[in-house]
Image 1 (tube, rainbow, N blue to C red):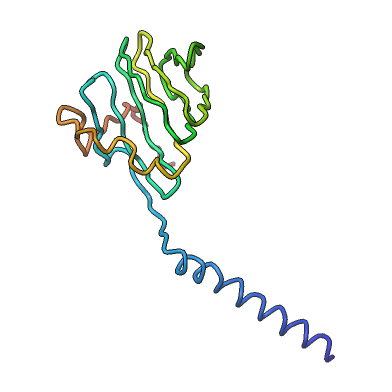
Image 2: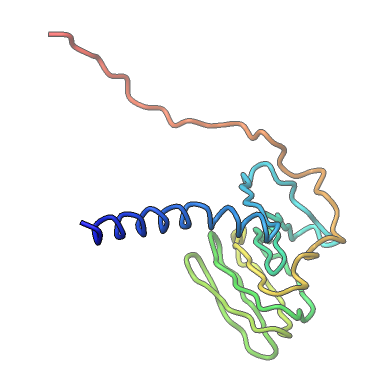
Length: 171
């Protein structure tokens, strides 16, 4: 009987520690969880109005955003001290990294190592991709760009597809 009580006591203490630990770690680290709806974030532009950036989330060691180019648009980014990951949502583009060219399109991913210079050239459709920069300098990504005054505003109008009318029978 004594062993059973010791097991129950150990399990209870373990459960209490497991419940308290996440709160203590979160409180000590000073970080908080943030949730962002992309449609509520202002898009940013620089002098080249063919390119837009939407900074979705920024952390101490990362940046997540949406990057888009108008059809035929170009954008040249200087070397960054951070690694970059790009996932294409729509359209296609040529990414020129150094002297090598890469054609990327929908559902493709591209990894750019730190210090890579890249020049983007969009195809015949609007190019939209998700960007993730990993590194300490990524927090200030696109801070010198201005808010796009001509861009979409929130809330965007919702368009619902028409559904066929159904007759409900109560037999």
